[in-house]
Image (tube, rainbow, N blue to C red; front, side, top):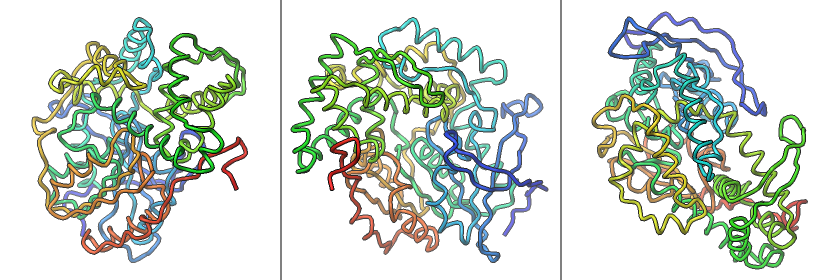
Length: 472
């Protein structure tokens, strides 16, 4: 059933492409014009990019699946291009709708030259100069105060009505779960099911716990290696290598020349504590990257071969810079998280003992002294109470949204199922059999009786014992 307020939307064939160029998806696209400032409907307008992947079945169901990306700063259309096969079962009978959240992708993206590694570095002047340049750059085309979750939820509801959908299903990953829960708070009657993958509870302030959660995820990965006969046989206790490297790099960074990921041009890398922290944190996001970590730590510690670690750093940094709209990221963090940092009373002694330390929290606080605070609904961080059936997905070794967060969020849903995949990291949509679980949940419209047996049999990728791969 279509809503009465549906607009005459003109769709055109288009291609959705992952930022790394690894995948493309055929879709139909349109652009909806929305006011940048809700309080000034006659002021500047921005184009909200919308893509739709039509259902395969001509007799499709009327309630599509809307996909919300993470970050904050990632675009839904680009995220979907990289994981489209995971949604193929849902797409048999339902349209997939992708809205690039304002400030990302093709919705007036707030891209700027910002080095994420600088956030963890010791050069405050360089980091703050980057922040000022970023703000100056994006302010030429946007009022950065208007690129927050509260504004995005208004866009999402406008798009639902404009496209003519009476009810929708939601899939959200990481930061997108905050958007999804806030949409449920204000428009829950329009949602049939919600899937939260790597859940940020509505009440959670992101930032103070990141270093502790990342350290705990790394500890899980290293313990898994120590308890694996092949991994321990090849490398001994990986914790020894990890601790030794932290100490060594604090005293003396390792310099080398490596080929850049995109151009192949040799670049100088002075691999220090901030680079190590970036690799350690991002390697625990996915089981594939984690599989290489004990080998890379062993090579660096035992043979002073930093090439595997430094190569991972270059690949990860290049990938992040292509996927993240840092201006939008800063607008969200500086409005919705940083103002509450003092209230969390983070234990700085505990933080200092982690590989991230206090640098990230202090860096975000300093960044947000420069970046303007934006629009925020008073109830953004209020506890959620929802009747909408919810499926929550977690990886036991998630470094940023660990299962405890999803367990907390699940209490706000009267009808929910929380599925934890042992040994996996952040975002479960690409894990084997999760596509079947998602499709079964969306098709049935209920979490009750959901068969998750296939997930219980999943195991993370085996550790690489040589650069050629895992042991036979």
